Amino acid sequence: MNFLNLSLGELLGMAGAISAGVIALYLLDRSKRRQVVATLRFWGAADSRTEMKHRKRIQQPWSLLLQLLSLLFLLIALAGPRLGTDDAGRDHVLILDTSAWMGARTGRTTLLDESRAAALAYVKALPSHDRVMFVRADALATPVTAFESDRQVLNDAIRQSQPGASALNLPQALEFAQRAQTLQARHAGEIVFAGAARVPENEAALSAVPANLRILPVNGALENVGLRKVGLRRSPSAADTWDIFVSVRNYGLKPRAVGLELQFGGAPAGSKSFSLSPGEEQQATFAYRTHAAGYLEARLNSRDAFPQDDRAVVELPSEKPLRVVVYSTEPELLKPLISSNQVDAVFESPAKYDPQVKADIVILDRFAPPTRPKASSIWIEPPAAGSPIPVKGTKAGIKLDAWRTDMPLGAGLRTKDVLLASAETFTLAPGDIPVAESTEGPLIVARPGSSKIVVLGFHPVKSSMKYELATPLLFANTLRWMAPDVFRTREVQAGTVGTVNVPIERGTDPSTVRVITEDNRPLPFTIEDNELRFFSGAPGTVRVLTGTTELVYSQTLPDVAESLWRPPSAVHKGIPRSTGNTVSTTDIWPWFAVLGALGLLLDWLLFGRSRAYRLVASLWRKAA
Image (tube, rainbow, N blue to C red):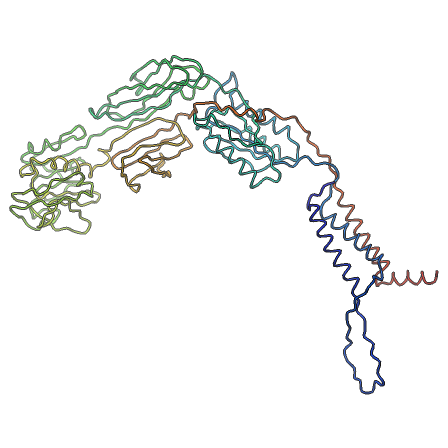
């Protein structure tokens, strides 16, 4: 016999406390105190007072015994006694491998089909009172059900499982199962793992596993050659050329020879053949020239059990040059500063000025038009009457003392003590940024806004600044500040979902870094030891913006782990022998409840202060 609600110790403790109280009541008696007096003449009516007298013996032992037995029977009924042995009631955690590799095919079925069948067979073999928590595991362990005894709910959850896109994180899944059993299980059962157990190389030797672990293995040693990564970046020597890097890996146990083909917009863009040893990874590099936007496709001509990683597609952005219109009477002075592969410069005379000109930036060389341009503008020695920044004055023999190197416009500028033959100084308004300063006042001023403005109080080529390295750098900083997207360094990668590590420059301010998805949602990230790390568990595009660099991660390739985990030999394997779906227990608490109630009723009839008691007592006296 076993108890459902109370343990044996709790039952005995409660029974002892109640019995002690009942016995104490039987040993106490209230009686009137007798007082012998000579007369009642001087006594008035008063309240009757009683005193407690302790009895040395119990007057009605049979009533006491009947009450104690009745209360004991009622306590036993509350404890929920059951006859028979109860081997059910254990709580198991069933982990189903739903990593990307589980989509590999073995004939007409996939590895996940085999694992689902094994998981269903395990659930069927359990006793009906056992509960199961079902967990899907890839890069994250995701509980699908709580500890559930309804077999239909569990079977539906198992059948609805599909392969994910990330690799299996086995230690995390096992740790989650142990924690769930510790915190939520009534009686911990087994932790069951069903899957191929393909894991990263550093987890292949995992041996510290739970003692209650059971494995439902499937054949995971399949041959596969797949794309590991496709990376693209603009060539530093040619702005219209993309440098392409492709990484291919042999995950199988046999040497493989495969061919790689690249296509851009449906046209061939390159090809290469690989001869890969087991576990080997090789890279190929290509160069492709284009200004247009489009899709670059990398494809392997390999036929294997896992075709999902044989093809990757990357969207290339178009590279539009910065359109700059220069209004100057001496255009040859500014051409060396403006011309570059990323700038499309047009030079016009001031007489042809158009405030509605289609340009990203307008440069006004020593003249002030009656109407300011709609686009961002650079003003070189503007006349005081038409300057967008008020001119404080013009000074001869003025010295340039300092640059605002803490601002993007002054980054890298170190030239000091340059003597200018003549220069304008300006009066700052709220929000204006002094870029170059002298003791007389600011010599270069920037004004942020929807249409940015930079005003130079001297001509950079017709002054002593002509021979300084700061002059071309100043113009480069100005153009980059006005049109940061044009000069942003872009890299595009097609990779796998999961954790991504991005090297960044030393000293990068985390507040200037953004990691956003394709729908502009921010992703959390960490920066440690000049490395940015973020996690994305679903296929998609993630952009990493760090200052002047933009990295686009097209996470479309499935993450296939490198190695197969070999469980320790002591771990249980396979479906356990079915113990049946019935439990041989019988509830007997109703009988104890009936006996307790009958005992109390009998005590009230035989020994209670009732008519029935008096009737029975008179009958006994007559019989005597």
